[in-house]
Length: 139
Length: 416
Image (cartoon, rainbow over all chains, first blue to last red):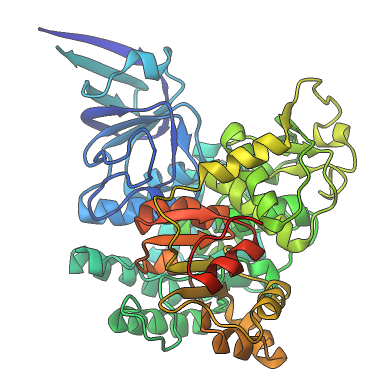
């Protein structure tokens, strides 16, 4: 059994991508808190500590911290460990830049709170061209 | 976004494919962030490091492609009249006996440094450009990488820069323009959160604690600090670095200090909120406790100069170390810009620090280099925050004096 629903949002960085959701109501710096080689979150005590971002639809509040975030996203993209797409509540200029340079779609302003609407492990299509996400819950 | 005919021509390749790509980044970035136009920038701080992923198993192709991107940037010239300095790297160009200073990476970084200089980038290799001559004036439009320096430029100097990444800062340096959004515009420099400081801030690291607290609450917003005295340059540096560690802050207002915030009302552009969040002595203590994770007292690494040390900090460190020696097997690092070390050499501070068994580390820092350690004592909240994950060390954040005591004893001796 699976349930599918769509949520409207505002496309930030255009593109379409699909992946398993990784959800945390948290902020994240890619430089210093993500290892570009493994694609894993290395920040001690972070809600996503130890989780791999590779191919995931990353649902977080926003990026924060280091200006090395676009660089780390670039290296992760080259290594094949980057997230597939971003769903953010607020748009940090650094995540936006990293997504533009590396062709990673980003969407924001979903019509429902993404932290309650989307669960880790849901299959999520991010359509940051037409401005919606399609969530398929696996149960 | 509105573009001039000259800008449209660059996008169409009139100045070659690389500058077309660079302008494309700036235009799309501007569109995404709500900019209406590109404006002139004549001060940048660019990020040109060779990544240190080799030791951790990155593919050679990743490094090759990334470094080729840096070479491509440096085959161009910085825009006429644009003052371009360069952020810290992941190795030191000095010869030091540390295996993490991988000779192959150093060779590539030296090649990039030489090419960058030829292109017009001044190889400052520092996270604190404002300590080595890049001191923009109030209102000056900048394009800076280094999150802590961005906060310092906006909040302490009254200059204007959004949070830049490597690609945007390179593009701005070569093209001399940035998209006008965020804190480049008056209306986006308004405070979003009022913090009343009743804690007594005695050391630079205490200011770091305040920043670490406020950054987490502010997120991408603009905290306003009321009730604090004027910080020293070193204290302001710690505040700004910590704000951009726990948060994604571009600027803060320190009432009475930030050039555009002579009063609380001015910081909020006329509508100071009555609600505020207190920062008390208890909050100060909690911030230290949040970055003190130790299962024992032995210390093998003490890291000072995050962000890079000023000459005053180095003088203070040297005076505390004079005639003494750090514990056997302990590494004491004082991170600084090369230009600051030149001053330290001239003043004799470097000799004192080296005689005590410490080292001044130029261009980078031990966490950037991923020098292993089991337990680190550091005066920087930023260093403590990132070292936990990046180096996998236990960390203790503390003021400069307890850091030096720990270095001499080889163990954590407490704050007093």
